[in-house]
Length: 241
Image: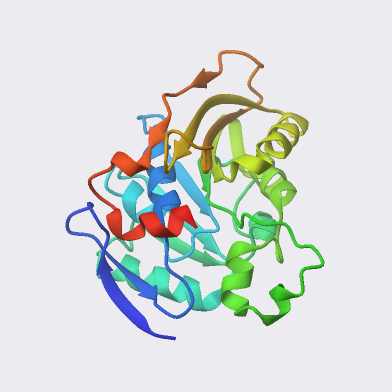
């Protein structure tokens, strides 16, 4: 493990610890944090699959309320704790080292206002390359320890009635996401597609869903073309892979 401390890009004054060998956050975490609607009704936020905590750190610049980050992998969660301490936000951001499937061990049912999630994007199949890949990377990228339905189950348990779930994911899994959101009684209310080239297929999708919301009133935001962003250039290549 090679741990480095970096600036958190355009969030001036914030720093983040990263592992150059195994795990570094990318643009999808930034876009997810920026996609969240913050209002005065929000009391508690939980970030699933928090990694080294980029989403909680960014959200801490937008609200003074409590933010929890849940991360399964201890080595990555340790980086998150270092970052929280470095930025002097220990009173606001709490890191929980556990699988999101175990949220009932840490929270009461229907006690959270907002959940954010940048999950592993890839299903596990018979691809032998997974057995040869760095285990830390494999768990971060593939559904080895949890899957999309686990996200829905835990979100259903945690969120208050009309609480908000925000997810960033690959577009090729959008249909599956919509099916599961409907199954667990989430109404999709806002969608935004992300492009690295506006003339090609979208590379990511951002979704806001509300627990127990009626179907209807879906807002499809203007497409986000990240090739036009003047900042975050250092991580654009990660998104385009």
